Image 1 (cartoon, rainbow, N blue to C red):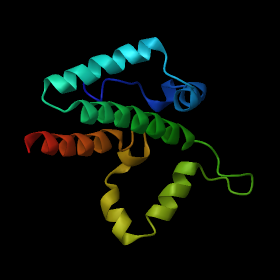
Image 2 (image 1 turned 60 degrees about the horizontal axis):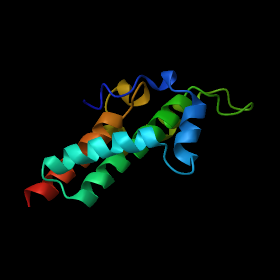
Image 3 (image 1 turned 90 degrees about the vertical axis):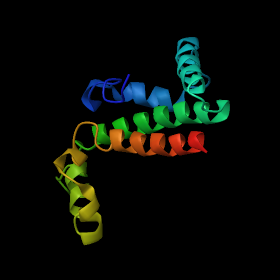
Image 4 (image 1 turned 180 degrees about the horizontal axis):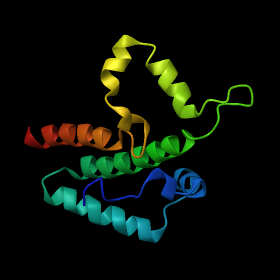
Length: 132
């Protein structure tokens, strides 16, 4: 399953789910089963056990935090500042020529944002560790 098909858009994930996912004490048995399957699939590809588990953990954490951030982009900055959080980020980041060059297109600010790119970078690094 690709990272593009694992989750719906951030708007389909309720804020309560994200809070629970980031703060729940312990891990529900159904999630442990999923992690075991993913971990096993990575180890079957030659990835050491610790690296496989770290990869699964990394992807789950970056996915939850990315979805939380993207969902928050639609909120208003404050009663004194009617811009959306998205617009506030865009204003501050695009004030820098160096940052603007790396931002890419408008998709950076919508939907999954940089999620797929972040996971791809991590997987590229993981692949290098296996090839050694």
